[in-house]
Length: 368
Image (cartoon, rainbow, N blue to C red):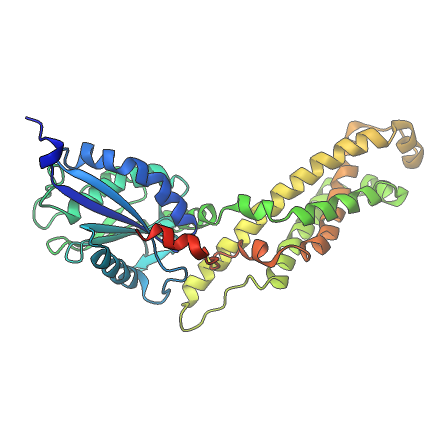
């Protein structure tokens, strides 16, 4: 027999985004659907209420998952939530393995490292969150009733989870990934959380400077001859050197390199730097493709085949236009680094994995 709305017990679940940047977007997308999923998979006779919250902009890096759990436990108690789950973009480790999630039944809180889930984070979270809530609230759970001393659930539903560590009987469980594939998934997840598209949009002045350089290069017969003389191997090397110079310049000029210190362990700083490099490399590569596409259109429109043939002293083939565009795009990318120095500092620094801008007054709106 169905229980009326009036007599259904209410359970409040808090979702905390720490830091309130990428994780806050994930929380906002999940909050609208989590109540229905909990009713479907944990207990339909409970009135599930979801609260959103923002954690610290700069959470402790040296305390690991325990520092996060302590902060979320205090937040849960202050807000009078029944259970709280922290979603964070911090990479977490335990026993030298990437840590995907950690539960603490005593504190009635859990933490989930979004990067450890890899690229498909939302589907993994939809499968994981009901399990985590059910384990933290066994008194209202009808689905999750593991035998004492056992730990099932996430290992069969979330691909990234390859093992469980900790004390199952005490409810202190850590869900870990495999050492090798898990690290690769963690790094790809960090790049995903770092939002390369945001970095790409932040390089608008770079593209403007690159297109200006390309336009000037198109008028030079010397560049035409260079494109004809250089083979595919050397053109590839020049392109890679140009992209490397651009990424290096962005990191050095805008101080994006994370240095180990008392608050940032060396291993964590290394992960941050790798994520920053991959994010900028991806954004730079896409910028290069946009530049290449625009340049080849302009080249085909402005340079007549007969004029190019007179310069090269031979018949012209379509590959000649491709080679010309290739060398011009590489030279223009180097020229575009000057434009990158004119970008807004906060816009470029957003590409650094360890940098999270303070959301300001909007943060207070999420504390209710």
